[in-house]
Length: 142
Image (cartoon, rainbow, N blue to C red; front, side):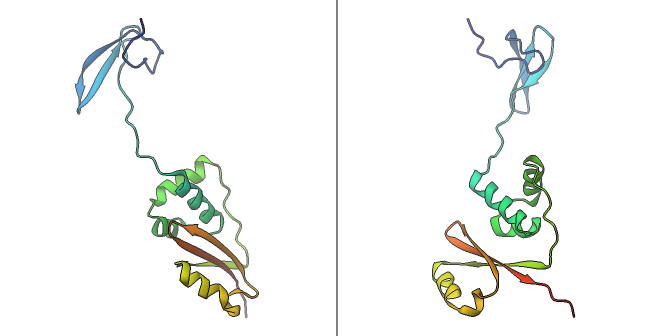
């Protein structure tokens, strides 16, 4: 008969018994190796859509704090994702990104003006019910 308790995280034994409650969580004891443990808590997960968007913005050169303000996700979470997925730091180039958040109507008006589109690199990405326009402006040295 299989144990109804979780296996020991140290030795993977199923010979487990209850061993009290700590901070409202059930504590268990392994009878094989005498290890005490509690069941791992389920962390708050973030939708993969926002993880992908945050990493896309990072690759485009948007800073961690700006990503935090745009997506409402902690900059520390973004840093952890960059480390986890081994995203390389973008190289500095002679163009700086600027971004705007526009709704559908504003986006149509923005793209219809030739001065906003001609001679510029631009990326338009969905951001919930709005759109983000990232443009690259060349840095000129006098």
